Image (cartoon, rainbow over all chains, first blue to last red; front, side, top):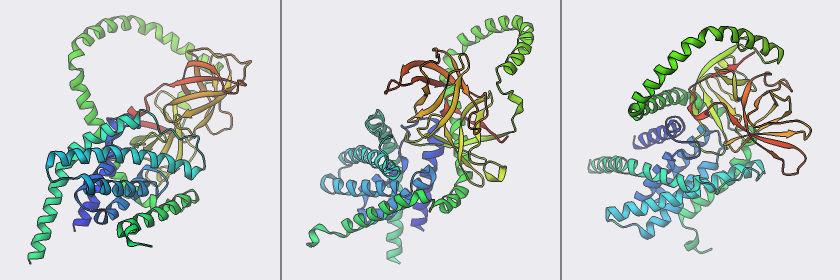
Amino acid sequence: MQNIFVGIIIFFGVILQTSFLPNFFPTGLIPDVVLVMIIIWTAKADFNAIWVRAIFAGLMFDLLSFWPIGINIFSFVAVAFATNSLCKRFLVPQSVRRFLIIGIAVVVGTMINQLIVAIGINLQNFSWNNLEIFNQALILKPICNLIILAILYWPLEKIEEVFRHQNKMIIKR
Amino acid sequence: MSNKYLSPKSIKFIAVTAVCFGLVFLNPKGFFNPVRMVFLEIAYPFQKTFYILGQNTDEFFSFFGSIGSMRTENEKLIRENNLLVSEVASLQEMKKENESLREQLNLVPRDKFDLEPSFVIGQDPQNLGSWLMIGKGSSDGIRAGMSVIVSEGILIGKIEEVYPDSSRVVLLTDSSSVINANDLETGARGLIKGTYGLGMVLDMVAQVDSLNEGDTIITSGLGGEVPKGLLIGKIQEIRMSADKLFQQAIVIPRVRYQKLDIVFVVKK
């Protein structure tokens, strides 16, 4: 049941990113809602618990954004792996610093995602003509994603609390 | 090998990486097209709802943002209206002259197309391609290669992929887009190529041909894929190609592709 609910959240995150947010942001600066969700989940749990969500989110995003299947799957899994490594070392229980660390993870994760997607698309075409990584999006995109982090962080935390509570109730029974 | 280097986490990551690299190279063979088709069928109603909701929200907030300038704009509009009333009679004559000139210049009359109107339901979320999703597909008679215009007869792109209820339109600013075009004023011929989703370049123009800033660029109809006489944009800047063999011109599109909500597919 929880997995289905998470799947629905990811599905609507992808729809939001491809059909709702393009009305408000210029092309290339549309926030990565799904990527930020994966980073938040990975920061709160372990990579082993999140990698399936990252694969599912990447697959949905690849399907809906018409990119080669596998690029965003790899990108999201790589970002989750990097986030998990970063958070294991630096994450603290104190909430403000915790939020800052996750913010850094979002910035780094955004840049990794941009790099992987750009290289992946060119690798598939065996062409490096369209490789334009170092543009203003590399600076502005993380800022947009940080705004999305501020919006999504506490709702997702509340949802995870509900899941934890439900799991406790199930165990008690 | 020591377990220190191959934790379960690392093994999963390496396995996913290997599978993804394999998947990426299967993509050109169209291996995943049936999966994509099914997924798009499921996602289509949600995409359409969210896109229209986004447009309406954007318009709502734009309205509040423009309240401050409304009074000034209102006064300006009253003055303009008075001028326009006196121009209406002379415009009737100009309309007749326009139709005659369009015939002479071989521009396609606007009412000669079989057009399929369609809402835009999605856009490229990244700047690595430049495309729109529209809410019409093969069940509405849409085919790959059809041209897509906006109501004023301005070409914006071509249909690249078709699904039962939706289609993907590759815009003229996409790097893979190449259209035969010519300069309406001078007749110079060239190719309109997209540049990383940011703009267009009229390339491969012979050095003996003449280009001027402000000239209008239209489709030439060569190749038969795109109808002749559709507006593309205006020349902003002229330069030589990197190899100095041809002229190039930076062309500014006539419409802002991000603000499109209704487009028309040229079926015939």
